[in-house]
Image (tube, rainbow, N blue to C red; front, side, top):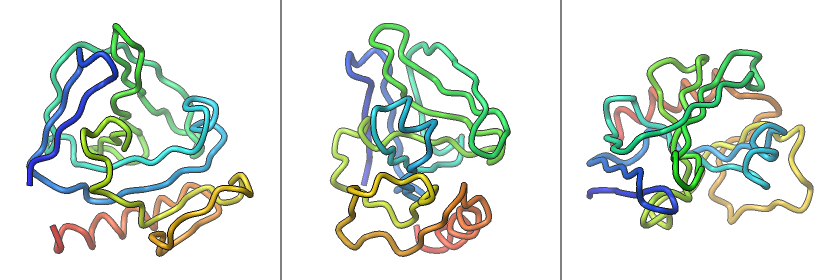
Length: 148
């Protein structure tokens, strides 16, 4: 199945033939401030998803203390993907950018220590961690390689 998506104005588009390695719900303060709520991202190896269009880059310190590059459309300023230093080679693509976001559900929830208490899930989350969950994310990525 082919997945595709774009920013709001469609100046930046993407496509892939693969399902994400992992879908993660993040409740950290950085994501909340940057998106206005929680963030759900689809994780792909950098070479598994093709982007076209120009982006601006904003580099900030993530919850781990390591840098994260956020790429935004130059026209509509929508965040189209992130490159976290702590997970080199992995591209985080926001769920909302996909043409059909209903194809994916998060399995891992991170930063539950700062989660808004009214945020609930449908039962799709199978693992929750209080912090960045880097070891858990890496293990889930490795597991998913066998199941894609």
